[in-house]
Length: 172
Image (tube, rainbow, N blue to C red; front, side, top):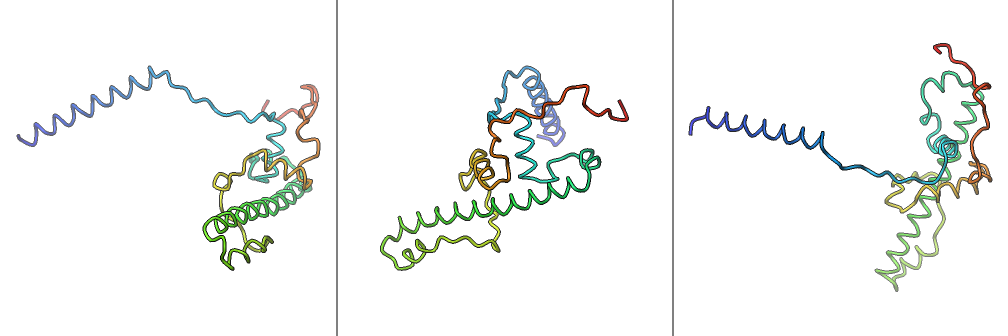
């Protein structure tokens, strides 16, 4: 076969694949169902603000915020990061203790590791929450215990603001 015939066959196959893809995209009945966590918008806002600090906010929100509020958010964020690091270290220690206890039950090293369960704030744990089996409700519980989130966080319904009290933006 000549090169031109192979080229034409290749073009035909590519066009057929494009048509099939377009049919699939326009006629597809597949939907993604997202998990809901049961927290309202205000609770998620407070959680994200504590967990991510100023990174959880838009540039517009940061620009309109006073410097004292920015500093409060930064301080809460730093405290939250210390608490999260401690939580991650505790989870890592308990998991490694389980492994050593299962694999080397009579080893003196295992006995030493089981007695040493102190966390070190100078070491930053970079493992993610999924690997450590830590979920959002665990983090919220710890944040409430440490005072990062309010004690009544689970019963918060959001700020009671009517449409009349909202500030008007310049471009509206």
